[in-house]
Length: 351
Picture 1 (cartoon, rainbow, N blue to C red):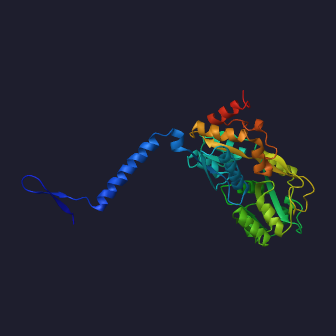
Picture 2 (picture 1 turned 180 degrees about the horizontal axis):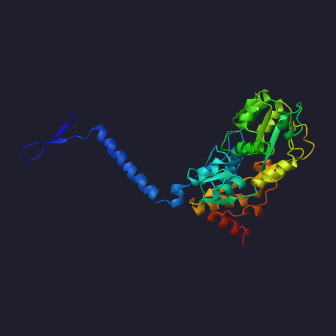
């Protein structure tokens, strides 16, 4: 019930409504809100908005996710105005998320970056908003892992034996599964063929792959990771393994679909029995890409921190130990983001 008070004066007394506690608090809250808006409006644009970006990386437990986290720590230590959220992703689907504006920056691999930009397999449409931020951040390598005591010494031997196998990699949407299907294609085999012989194809996270291999539920672990890959280290710690080399004819086939010849350097893994030799395989460069609509100043400051702290970049992961900023702006046929381009020109890396 509304309370009233009597106003004394000439003539008849007038009844005036008293403000209740709720009315008073609402007026105070409105005043505070107006003052807060006025204060924020007086701040510079950067202070109001900050540098808020989402970085789509790889699966939790994989190299990209932890590497992005390492970069975020480095960037925020040099420029606290950045607020970067790292979320899980996968090599193929990251490009589509970027094109659709679901993320500002993402990890990518050159074959899939270029395929998405041009609208080629495995993409249906051109991803015209793709822009390069930084290339040359080491490589990921295809790693075909089997138990050390298995009979297999080559990949060809696995497919020619026709025996039941249980093979695992990460789910569709990532580079791992796409590349594995291409290897199956080369050996004229399908997932259905594996299952028809009593085998299994397991598509799970890196963490689950390591566990399944270690628990002896899997014969073959197939992964596309920077060396040394945490999932490979964890899997081999409980069950020693051999990483099978790729035959030259398989490598040439993979080069034909846009991939690059590489090696897993000797000494990369403690619990891999053929760790004393370089292992021929396929490699792809780790690359940071951005949506063209991300503000140039944000990408400029992001890039500037990294090219100005080369030692810090190299310490994030062993794959980056040979990082050379001269390679950072190089990726044929993909335009540089204007912000990154300005940072490279200021650093003397572009003319």
